[in-house]
Image (cartoon, rainbow over all chains, first blue to last red; front, side):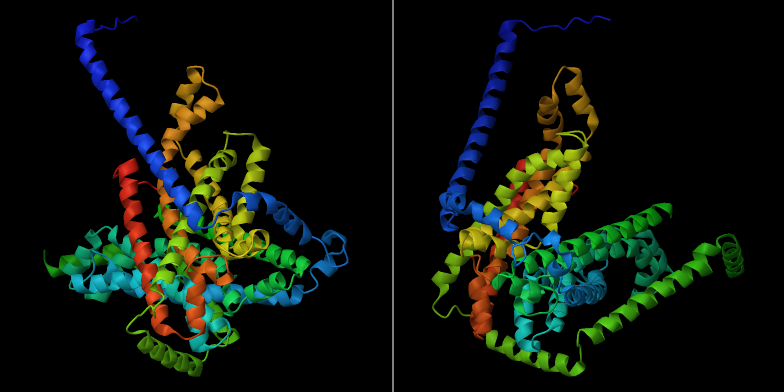
Length: 294
Length: 284
């Protein structure tokens, strides 16, 4: 079917075309201005951060040669020729990896429990009064904005060297991060069960137990698992400041130029992180699938 | 309704929906077992990681002392120096994020299905990004320090490297989640793959890309505050130093500076996000 497109006479179109051109010109002006601003910011930031492309270009071979060097043993052999020599410390390292996982686990668990207790006070629909909500939110914000390594540095001084300050640092950061996510989940619940529970005379914790928790539990578990993944990574560097785990071994190997140890420990960390990612992803998918079936 | 009727209802409800009143024995056993295993692991971890009430009590006492010494926060005459390194920190985060986003854009398309290259490209790009993401920013900083020396430049490179991994993953997920119809439309008018990506895909993923990049800028500001601990520039160096020398009032000052900087960046980036992609929420 052919339809004729009616074209307005030129003198009627002209103002529309002009308006269109003006709009487009304004848009590209705004775009150009944005680009120029970005360029200025990049230049300023490059100056402040002492970015030196020349130095980078001159030294980039050191990056590749460093990466290459960590794959050669002390006797100049490629690592794969003697895996036993390469992973000579595997017993010790696996124990440290295990400790790293325990640090991440305990930190996540403690943080998640604390977040669970506080999230109801921080959510806009269940908080009892604006003041407690304000306090809860600022507390969570503080805990997640201060980097966990800073907490770890302070705790190492207060509690002494070892994995305990690492666990506490991760727990506090997790508390801040999960508390916010949990509160958002709680804000998105269906309020009808809550009204129903209140109508039967339930107290605050009964309302939470019977009307809220069943709605949010699978989401909470899923977010906690995601956090665990992140915390495994975080725990792998806690040793840099003396707070336990595999990081201690790694930073020593890097600082003392034990090249093949660096690659061996890095590979162990990467493998661990990948396995944890895979496992938690599986569990999370099952949780979500279980939720969908209900 | 009389009470008796409601009681009857309760009985019939119990009969007809047993799963809702009381979960099946299997569910209850599994739940109990999972909880018991979690508890056992937690107890093992507590013992293995040398937790003790004495240590916790001592430490809390120490923390209270530190907290007392933190008040009032003071720069101890180094406010200029601290502000300068804070600027350095923000610059590190800004450049690192921007570089990573630029490099990850093509990689994201390579890691997504049916965009650039075939299955092999997709597989390799994904494993590459997984490997990079498995290594923490701080470790990358240690490696880059060997290449460009101590200083903020190493920090920029470290943030860039670790974010290339994250961005590649996020971008490829965004590309795979698009509506295919505009892409098909471009193909049907005779566009090639490049046209499809530019006019069929990019307009759809741009809002996600921008909002993710802005979000990472904010979170990288936090990461950039700590890479100074290993010598890669920024305020972390001073912070670590002040903690190690027990200058608690200065520690408090620096922490407040960091909090303020993050709050400002949070505000600016959310304004920018609204300005660039509108107020609608972008699903991450």
